Amino acid sequence: MKALTAALTAAALLMAGSALASEDLVKKNACIGGHDMSAKKVGPTWKDIAAKHKGGKAEELAAKIVSGGKGVYGKIPMPPQPKAEGDSMAIAKWILSL
Image (cartoon, rainbow, N blue to C red; front, side, top):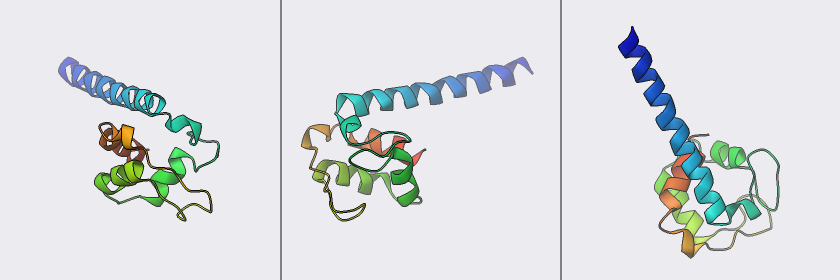
């Protein structure tokens, strides 16, 4: 029983750590200027993005982060974020996990 509790605790800490790391990445890459977890800003919320891309591939969302996009969530385009290329896959996986 102690081993199971320890394993579950370790798994929870790893998941929490990756969520915090990803939140740090969206701050580092200035994604929070246009997006938020629950409040619509210039762009959609993280949860709205996750819902729209449910079942999608992280690679596709990561590419969209880097190249930008328009017309998916309205008239305001998301500008390309080439500086986020190194972090885009981790950010995409985090968004899709929401």
